[in-house]
Length: 146
Image 1 (cartoon, helix red, strand yellow):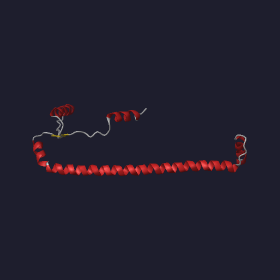
Image 2: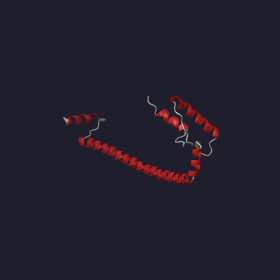
Image 3: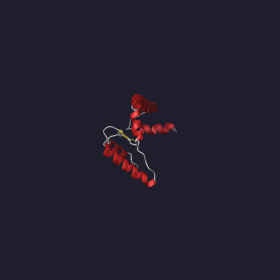
């Protein structure tokens, strides 16, 4: 049965007489090339994954060192913050205007007043931007469900 299928396939291939060994060698070669390509692709992706993992670990270690330094600096500045905390004033990062703090406090108070709670603002600081706004918009647009 297989011999008949091979003979029919061989007869239809542009008038040439291909033997079963010719066809089998082409099939085996093609499959070998595909699997070797897949193995190389897997190795390539795993190497990139390892490289980025190391990069992220270095970045994480750097951030932890910065946090430890900031915490040490905060402990030395703790008496100053305790005086401010006693006055119920929020700790404000340098470069933020008092008007902006007042607007933030008013917005938070307006949102929390619906629940009957009185919020206490302890600090105001700038957020660290994760992405450019245009990049974030593009990402949201391209990953939106259909």
